[in-house]
Length: 422
Ligand SMILES: NC(=O)c1ccc[n+]([C@@H]2O[C@H](COP(=O)([O-])OP(=O)(O)OC[C@H]3O[C@@H](n4cnc5c(N)ncnc54)[C@H](OP(=O)(O)O)[C@@H]3O)[C@@H](O)[C@H]2O)c1
Image 1 (cartoon, rainbow, N blue to C red):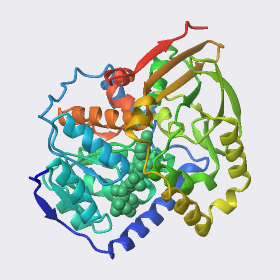
Image 2 (image 1 turned 90 degrees about the vertical axis):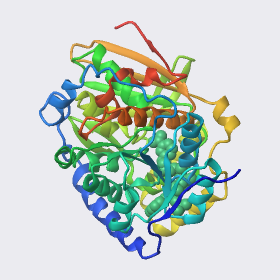
Image 3 (image 1 turned 180 degrees about the vertical axis):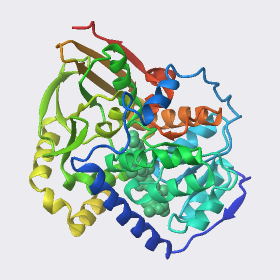
Image 4 (image 1 turned 60 degrees about the vertical axis):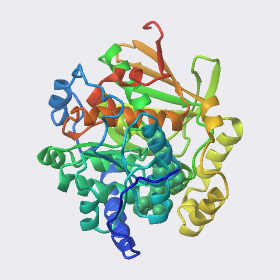
């Protein structure tokens, strides 16, 4: 295919890794402050902080959909990764013209050339290069993870340059780090919205919908089924976080628990499945979207995988060892980059959510969505389109706090069902 891409090499050199490492160290320091039993850095709705602004945007404004062909002015960073490539492909199929970016010149340029898009190459370790890379951009859709290493330098650049920050993280520490910068983002007039993929768009919308059904709810349980095939990047991110154990929210605080500390049998609408508590992103984000103080997230798993989680929990200290992590990541890299188109087309995800209030009332709702990576691409593009249409409320935002619980229903292939209130 003839390439019409304009190539702009902004920066690319190994020295950038020093910056990445120091950003990671800073991030990890922040994570210790945010995660272990500390109050969350931003008040959820119902307190002050985000609350007023969230209320102001609920119900969400009438949003103008970006017409196919009109979406421009955004950049996908990490566009040569499995998910970045998928999102770029879906964007082009919708006649959008995102700029594709990353740190690896040949890889990014190859993807850009295949789609006739502009490529920009810059390393996150060089702030001046990142600033040049964001020239003329209104929104960044950050797809380079693990985000513990990559989010902070990109958020910094977005705040400096007045650019909306979107990413596809599912990492609790990254959500909390972005939430901690709410005031900074408001001063900069910028929206920070990590988690515009499968983690956490559907579950965040389900949580907000349940809160709408039972406003006095004090306990939220969410569960996910159908995530069978992971990409290399997602597996690497999991490997980096396994040794941290599990995490729930109790009395509004992120509270460490053993990995897979609790098992629950859940009906996702197709019979009972056994699910294990996992530190999914909603233990961070659902609090900002709903103000519910007690949150646990479960993942449905076959018996073999549950055994693996129990094993990982027992070996947690060992899994933090750099050599062990390197060996596990090498194993992952020997496999496929991610699910094939056929696997994505065949797959589907099921979500279940339950809220309970102090009077014992209970509401249960369920969602069915396309397969996780397909949903990630669709959700990320839906939110990007809303941002480019002018709907980007400033500050730290979760998907449902910015766009309401019904955001998920705007995404093709998503259905929601409510059980009668009990
Ligand atoms: N929340 C969700 O639902 C969801 C869905 C999909 C993916 N994800 C997350 O998204 C991330 C990417 O997943 P993937 O499957 O696309 O992974 P992947 O195929 O391994 O791609 C990773 C991408 O990130 C880039 N990258 C990694 N570290 C970088 C750094 N320090 N500086 C600049 N670029 C860097 C890589 O660039 P190089 O080629 O130069 O290394 C590559 O472009 C993972 O963290 C994954 O967990 C989340």
